[in-house]
Image 1 (cartoon, rainbow, N blue to C red):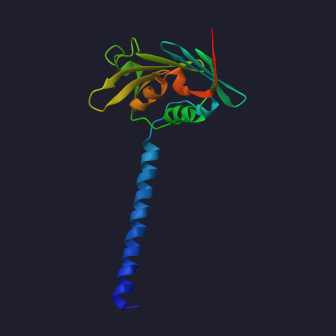
Image 2 (cartoon, rainbow, N blue to C red; image 1 turned 45 degrees about the horizontal axis):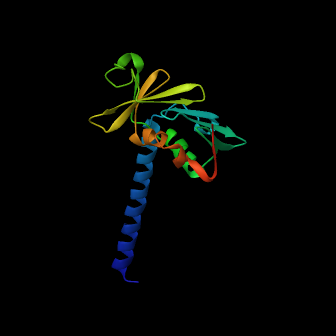
Image 3 (spheres, helix red, strand yellow; image 1 turned 90 degrees about the vertical axis):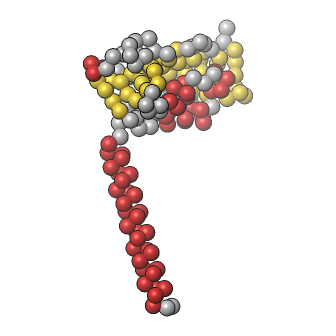
Amino acid sequence: MHKNTRSNLFWFAAVLVLGIAAFGVQQQQNKNQSIFLPIDAQQLQRIVINKDPVIELKKINNHWQMLAPLKGKVKDQAMAKILDTLAAPLYTSYAIEEVSLETLGLERPNLRVLLDDEALDFGALASTQQMHYVRYQDRVYLASPFLQVRFNQSPEQLLDVEEVEDVE
């Protein structure tokens, strides 16, 4: 092998290793600075989505079932997306005392979701960041709009169509 080729390969490999190391350090810093909802999504047992119609989901024997407005097994993929989005990093967090719930659209939330016995309230879209204000317990978070989108699905979108029963 020619001397210049070996030298070029060495420098290419060195730059590649440094680039990968820098990327790893940046990812770790981002992870350390991330904010998360204080929810253990894997431990949830019941979700009630307060919209018209109210959707009630319950974990029974390690599988999510819809109890209302229809009955049946929830699609594994649909539930995985909801739980993944609940566990995703958020952007900013504020104590309730620091903000105006009315200004953020949280005085009368446009969507309320009960996670076990805790309320998750969705407010206005933050104009500069295209994130939703979300209240959980004593904090307000800026969250991806996909979080609200996941909960705004219709009952039919959530259900495994092969296992649907009408509830009357």
